[in-house]
Image 1 (cartoon, rainbow, N blue to C red):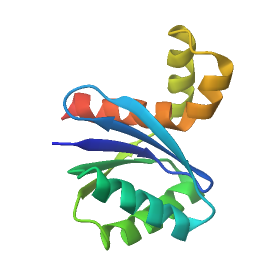
Image 2 (cartoon, rainbow, N blue to C red):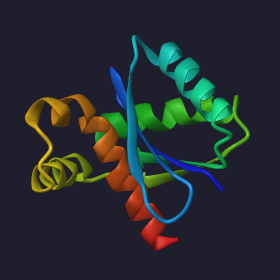
Image 3 (cartoon, rainbow, N blue to C red):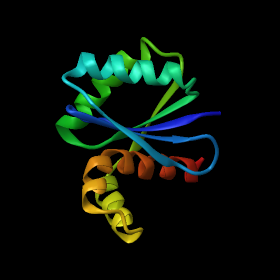
Image 4 (cartoon, helix red, strand yellow):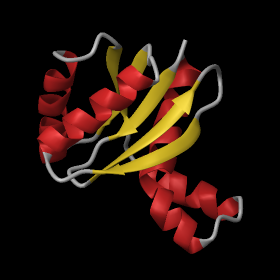
Length: 127
């Protein structure tokens, strides 16, 4: 079973992957708008035969935008899609990447993928 964690943003989408019990940061996709995000994420899900998509959900206006995006995503992919609280996932990801010695440039470039890995790992630990 293949899982991906998604840190959805309006300009960047962080993706982490897991084939088992450990989440790994994978990539950051730059997007122009919601349609571009939908197209790129859909292609990734189908290309990698993803069973379950774990999408980080925050609060406020961004939570609304994320839910709206997920409704569109559900209409074009067969994968199970679930929400996972992403509160402080970026801060935790930054702290962890500093602790393991990632250089600042690499941390900044992959920050959203690290946040996706944190939220995916939280989900895997609970399930």
